[in-house]
Length: 322
Ligand SMILES: *[C@@H]1O[C@H](CO)[C@@H](O)[C@H](O)[C@H]1NC(C)=O
Ligand SMILES: *[C@@H]1O[C@H](CO)[C@@H](O)[C@H](O)[C@H]1NC(C)=O
Ligand SMILES: *[C@@H]1O[C@H](CO)[C@@H](O)[C@H](O)[C@H]1NC(C)=O
Ligand SMILES: *[C@@H]1O[C@H](CO)[C@@H](O)[C@H](O)[C@H]1NC(C)=O
Ligand SMILES: *[C@@H]1O[C@H](CO)[C@@H](O)[C@H](O)[C@H]1NC(C)=O
Ligand SMILES: *[C@@H]1O[C@H](CO)[C@@H](O)[C@H](O)[C@H]1NC(C)=O
Ligand SMILES: *[C@@H]1O[C@H](CO)[C@@H](O)[C@H](O)[C@H]1NC(C)=O
Image 1 (tube, rainbow, N blue to C red):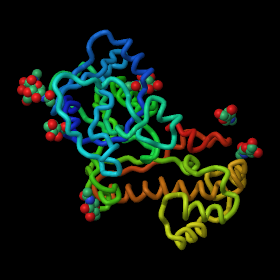
Image 2 (cartoon, rainbow, N blue to C red):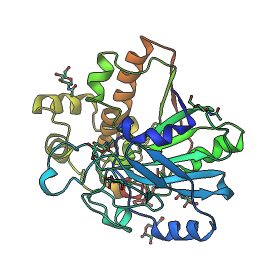
Image 3 (cartoon, rainbow, N blue to C red):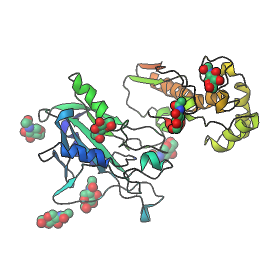
Image 4 (cartoon, rainbow, N blue to C red):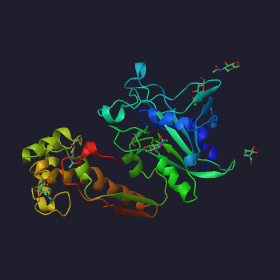
């Protein structure tokens, strides 16, 4: 996808979607304190924005440009309504703002949480000649529309643009995008995606990131969880079939290759749902994705088992740092 460097100015018309961030006010104040001059300015369809110039990172950033209306009030429970404001003068895009409401107030609401939370952030390298075209990377951060915000240090994109700057390549990066017009499975199965080379990685122990701890003592616990709490909407016969395919045998469980160890502090049968959940959420979807991609373009799948499983009750779900 090649867009001009001024892609940033067209963010609105591209209608990029997002869940956005808890603001990083402290960071933003620090960043501002390091900037003496006016920030970089861009003109979008209906007005102008001033961002932050970060010479020390070789970046200009525009934080939290709204692409949709407040989702509160009469918009509550409606699909996001397109942003429809026009203004004279310049609005500031210099601080992270609201995270959408979620269940991790500690991590996500430190700098605000609210219904007016749909926006994008744009990071671009500095010093690019006018009209030079740059590839645009669209980053949709993880956390399944349940938690997470674009201000989190692991999602804030500094690293993503910094690396290409460091190796002399340039990209424009934006956080999140409503460039996905239907369920991804619909788009995937009907071939409606960019037919370009594709790489898709996961690691063997993904399930340990999502399997709850301490609740899987018995078969019944696992059945109840998969049927009623996991959110998969599998009927009971499917849950029973899955349980038959994934017996209570720690040697076949996840973390991989840990033999008969049960990691019992997590609960007696923990390795079994960790295997099931990892396959449902990551490995099966990766395979399905890759099969459809491979019909159209070169496709590679890989595992990145770079860190060993941490044998402790801390190394799970809520401690996930991406
Ligand atoms: C621009 O402003 C007009 C008039 O307020 C509005 O109808 C339109 O939706 C706005 N466009 C964008 C992209 O915000
Ligand atoms: C912008 O300023 C012009 C000229 O004063 C005025 O006609 C127009 O209504 C203003 N637009 C907005 C959105 O305030
Ligand atoms: C950039 O492109 C625009 C539109 O094609 C053109 O009007 C302008 O002169 C170009 N600027 C430079 C510096 O080439
Ligand atoms: C992103 O987070 C890192 C690590 O906390 C920080 O150094 C950097 O300034 C942040 N970038 C932005 C754009 O907030
Ligand atoms: C999503 O895909 C389904 C099935 O093809 C279709 O019926 C529906 O209209 C699509 N929705 C949108 C918003 O395109
Ligand atoms: C994991 O930790 C438990 C509790 O500290 C310990 O009993 C067990 O031996 C450890 N297992 C491995 C494979 O390190
Ligand atoms: C687990 O987390 C608790 C609370 O944050 C901390 O006190 C403890 O040291 C951690 N244990 C390990 C093994 O990291």
